[in-house]
Amino acid sequence: MQIYRGSYMEVTNPDLQNSREKVDFGKGFYTTPIYEQAEQWAKRFRKQNKKGIVSEYFFDESSLSDVKVLTFESYSEEWLDFILQCRTCKDTTDYDIVIGGVANDRVFNTLELYFDGLIDKTKAIEQLVYEKANLQITFRTEKALSKLVFERSVEV
Image 1 (cartoon, rainbow, N blue to C red):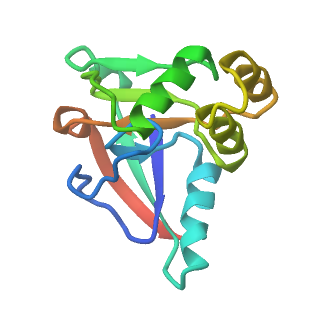
Image 2 (image 1 turned 120 degrees about the vertical axis):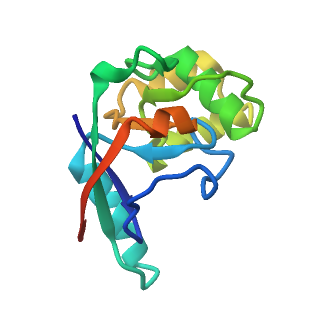
Image 3 (image 1 turned 45 degrees about the vertical axis):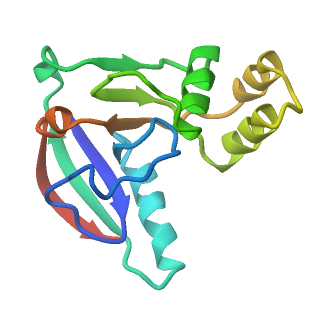
């Protein structure tokens, strides 16, 4: 499978040292199988007078027998709980790879209402049903990162 990362620089050797905490699926290397999504991520950096770069990787899905993977098929209560745990640095799970929807700006507005206690979990999920789910694949361990092979990058 081809996967992509949008950034301000080419990333030939992904690592975890430069990863941020308090994000959707915790500290990790974030990618997507949707080129247009990575392109949008990369173009955001141009607003900061940086380059927009999409790096492309080959990810062999058949090589996952030795890693622990968590997959969210849709926005759900489980996804919401996991995002909350990760964004508050309370995630204690040992998943190597997490796959699921992105908490983009529109989704994040709903999450903020939930996190602030202004709507309950049921209402948050009801609102998220109407959002088009993007997809992210987060590599959270060195073992998981070893499954990626850099292929090329392009400036967008």
